[in-house]
Image (cartoon, rainbow, N blue to C red; front, top):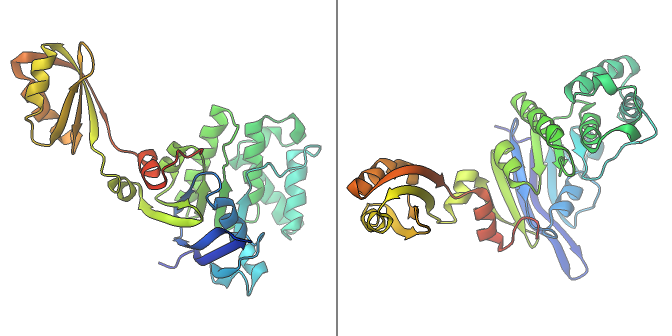
Length: 312
């Protein structure tokens, strides 16, 4: 499968500071690729080079069949960019904003009018198309910002923190829309400080730290690098200490810790598959009245690989 975007060896230096150090990744058609990193890790620098806003010191970017350096206009025409900051004119209506940006894209009047209607419907703002953007909520502005980037029907959409500061309803609407775009075959580059969004939307994730890609893969591949066990919380009715002793003998359970008068926390490999054996091991000492399994997640992998929480 031919990748929609291929970045190879992207490098950017500011004096002695290496903001991007030989960054390489690709995005396939119909794939959402997550780009994660602590603040200052190099995400913004990478995106700025990718969309041609920042000149790279070394490396290449190919978008579709076009090299960004050799044929920048053709390459950029395939990209829709949704910046972190709202890029709209607040004194104009939604439709006026779309018409202005559509003409910048070079879209003829009739196709543009038709496309504006489609975009407004897609982002759920058709009923507010005639209202000035300054009257919109933060979530509505975010959705219109995405609509602007979709006007020219790009092959790839780059979303930089698209849900920052939005209400829960708009956040759900944005994520639903992103998933529909991917299902329709669009490629996405997605950055967010909300780990659950990346886990929901993205098939593969690249983690950047100190200007370098330190890990890349699916959620499962990244989590497997952490080496953490599943955590199983049991609520018991009976002799909790005796139950814990028995649970430590279950194959696959590495520890059983009494955490309360009625609770035991287990560390185990493949926790969900062990539940029948765990319940059987409790036997006559206690009755299991509650179970919760917490598997290693992307946030644990991120912390393990970078030593930082996502917002650090």
